Image 1 (tube, rainbow, N blue to C red):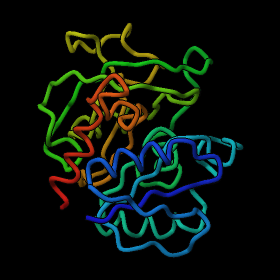
Image 2 (image 1 turned 135 degrees about the horizontal axis):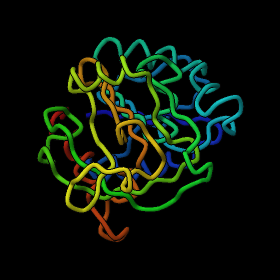
Image 3 (image 1 turned 30 degrees about the vertical axis):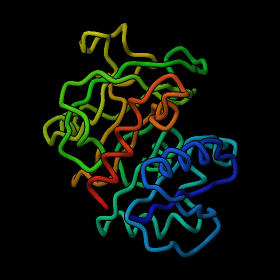
Image 4 (image 1 turned 120 degrees about the horizontal axis):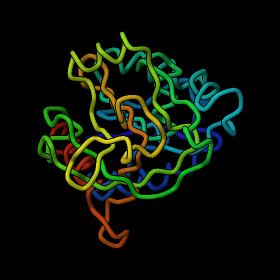
Length: 229
């Protein structure tokens, strides 16, 4: 299995993602610079977290127009799995691969803490090692993490079973109190129509090793390797 990690100016989780991928794969992923117009043959493309282009204009807006993104979009539409984490999720919405937008947190503050998530489905390459309804712990670190879409889009996401994870409490209850950023319907991550593109605000790569005090995120990378190997 070959994986590529796209690196933008301002990415700061690209190495974290590469380490988590290498632990699951047994070999290092390919690091691809945003200015490249070509992309190696890849079974998985990962857009990492960070502050691409300093989050000027809107988070992810400039990165969505990087030369490499034309090829990322083409590969995604052809069925190559793409995982966008935090800023990567923002890039996916700005590039049109996922609906909705990521807005300023309801508190208007940067939030950095662990949160609990409910696994809404486990029939995709990203989530096979979870059980539906599992409560997992991932960190968040964002100021523009409030997922917003109009009611029709939200209803479509629900109807098509495209919500991947929701913010929840320890019992798995999806409550307002468990929502750290004001995201509509507690949405923390969504899929595209085919379940091959996942945008996720929390960081699974930051809890993918026991030395980091948690391994809930490791299952996502293991799921990808199991499915795509």
